Length: 317
Image (cartoon, rainbow, N blue to C red; front, side):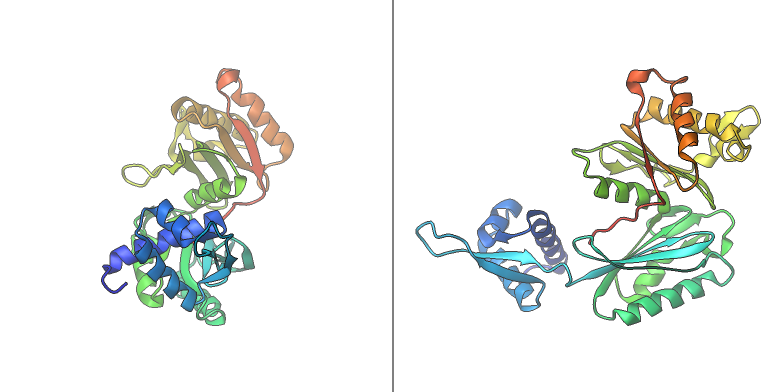
């Protein structure tokens, strides 16, 4: 493997890991055929991964006349990930394995305050110290717009604005870090956990403590926009003197405002499903939103409505 460039080694390793998790088990030949990588190269990688207990053998296949092939499965406990959601009222975190199984969940006081970076670093240090060798990657969802790990728009939290949180923590913890808009994280997490087939188009709408936001997915891809500002729906002008963020604060007016916003999404990206959080609205209110949306859009083009409790974090290696 030393003859394979480092960047290529990482790509091959990632492909093998992903395939074993998807297939549940595979032989060297099956992986070689699926990934279109030579058998000797696959064999070298699997030998090293087995030595490091990243994969395990689950026996030999039936013989087809020749030597029986060894079958491998991925050890999901070999690597753990840490996902963190920054909220106005609290900080939520989840530790998960490579199969997406939750190992631990918890919360701490909000770090979206003065000296917040120090508080967040202390929290991560505490979690990593308790799992020193297992946690090898981190994902952080923030209530703001993010450009390749740099938070450039996060109203009300100036201590995090224009800060490269990804670069800072990758240097500090020597682990890969993903920093993403919280609603983009939520829409990916919903899709991964929903079992939807194909490449869906989704809108995940949340009017939380930090103001409204939306996660947009079109044909299975998250939409971030040319300046990574997509989903900042509070600025959508809806009435003569009100944008969406202002309108939903006006009591019963939030039903019409929300239905107008969903109609706008339907006419532009035509999602098959709109996800609403039912911890911020009664079921009766959500039903009124569905009915109101039908006043603006022909029935045959209306999306399906799904409700969830809270936001679903992405669990993937």
